[in-house]
Amino acid sequence: NRLGTPPAPGITAFSSAPDLLRLTISAMPGRSYRVEYTDRLDAPNWLPLGGVLTATIETLMIELTIGTEPQRFLRIRLE
Image (cartoon, rainbow, N blue to C red):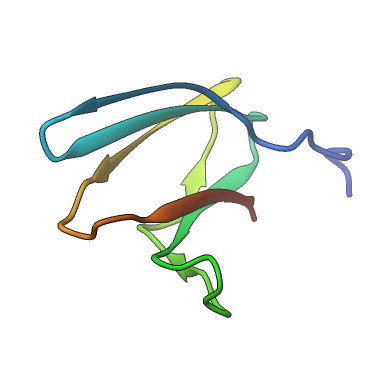
């Protein structure tokens, strides 16, 4: 791996507006990230939410539409 071992992405800020969740995560420029979700933590699979995002600076802002689900669990996956 020529880019070295990357640090785990972490949420550095979040905010919400009607029907919108905005996450800012720590990132490594040149690395790609994907948001995945599940509605139940005991579900065997996590599903992609949107496409792959490539960081150009040390932070990455992700905007997600809030649906009608009573709860949803999110994770950020380094690709």
